[in-house]
Image (cartoon, rainbow, N blue to C red; front, side, top):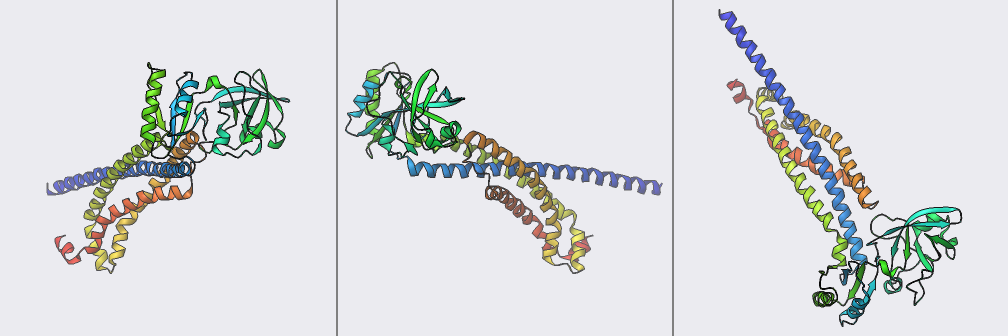
Amino acid sequence: MAIVSVSAHTDFAKMKNIKLFQGVAIYKALIVVQFSVTIMLMIFFVILADYEIKNNATISSIVTPNVLTIDLKGEAYENLQNEISQLSQVETTLATNWYYDAFKTGNCSVQLNDKTLGIKYVSIDPNTIEAEGIRLISGKNFPENMPQNIEQYVLVNEAAAKLMESKSETLVGQNLLLDSTNVQVIGIMPNQIFDEPIPLIYRYLPNEIATLIIKIKPNTELAVTKACQTLWKNHFPEKTANIHNLKDLYSGEGSRERIGFFGFFALVVMIIAALGILGIASYSVETRTKELGIRKVMGASNRKLVWTITQHFSMLLLIAGLIGVPAGLFCGNLLREEMGSHVDLSFISTSIGFGLVAIVGLLTVLSQTIRAGQIEPVKVLKAE
């Protein structure tokens, strides 16, 4: 009877240990998943933050804070532009769909020699080039007093010139069939600075202008904004004026919101993952107390005892990295497809993202495994 009792007790203990082992294995797998997701989000966050910093630096070096934009909403703008130009705080006004970047583009069919291509175009104020001091790659700017009803000349950017001709210099002076209109290429513009450079044709189409650019004197934004709102209301009382600071518009509110969202989400997931690995690290130290005590009696140093426990968790973090790093680069590549080649998927960004998570994970583990080096063998073995 006693033998049966001992045997039943032994079987129960084995079953309990198996279930406990299975539970710990599932818990470890969950930790790998949590840290993989955290690494992915952190790498994506670093890539996005790097893009935002570089983009803001480019914007700050080119666009001054003294430029406002008005969405014309399809309205006739000539009288409004003239009245705004007369404000004492205003230096220049430009009716244009392009100002270092395209606000609104259209599609056109271009025929040159034996080539027929579909290329985007943008309507630009002829005065923009001179007003901004933009240096053309070759050719010349639109002539003064451009006719509004007849299209005669166009500019193209480097990307469009490369698409149409192997040497951009040979394109200047040539005639194109633009949709059904014959026009002459008179100059080559540099590629746009923001976003991905795309082939672009610059045309003067007053009826398609959608934006009014207003360059103002320093520290007059509030006064000019109020004056423009009043003038807009006088001309178009049924519509609300949309007036923005161009630098704020270029700075990318959407990008900053994404940074905040993914940064917060990555932080929450990291905290959850850290709490998970904290619990299992504490459990590992508790269950291996006797083993660690014997190792210390046999001469193991404190550092070796700590490493005995920590190395297993280092492997978990490494496995999480093998999953999370490619996933983070994949997300970064999706961002590059949306934002352009300015998004940098460099080794440095990847290392920073992975390193931040690995450091937090290892510090969390060490906060528990360091207790392994403080074990007193006599007390442990006496308790056993």
